[in-house]
Image (cartoon, rainbow, N blue to C red):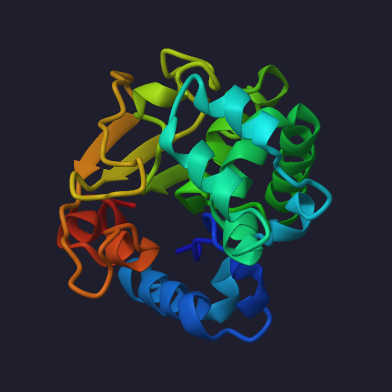
Length: 240
């Protein structure tokens, strides 16, 4: 039987730094996926770095105002107060979301990068968390990417796609993606704007409730917690 290949796409938080060392979250995700999918070795799970694409951009108060006037108003005040005080945190977290939606050329570069990884790696499964899920939706919903992905299974987790605040920034209502299957792992306790159901009724879409309340993570947004949830294992990983 052919061994499956998995491509992982992380969320916000400057996570690229650990990719070459196979430590931390990279090691955890890889080991979990190898176990759940009975993969042969480490090379069957690959990761797409993309933090560097955000470095040329620096979200301004104007960018925040434009974005948040249609979505999450509270963050703009934080951005204006803290710019320069906790810049690294802002660059790696809310800035990445605002920049993703406010700069079409950035989204185009990310789509091109994902296309390159799909072409080279030919993944059977893509696991995308948080911002990674937005990147994947942007890619697979784009008119130029409607063919050639019919065998791919997409698993999104901690996704903000169901948040009504984003409907002005995405193809909305949610469209059918040209994939084999699209599973969305949802946690109603997620505190990173991701607790909302994705309202979609397509033949290849299924939402899986993966409830968890992590004592060590008040945001309840950890990609590994989604990946290792018992319902994710039984209803997604063991069905692939």
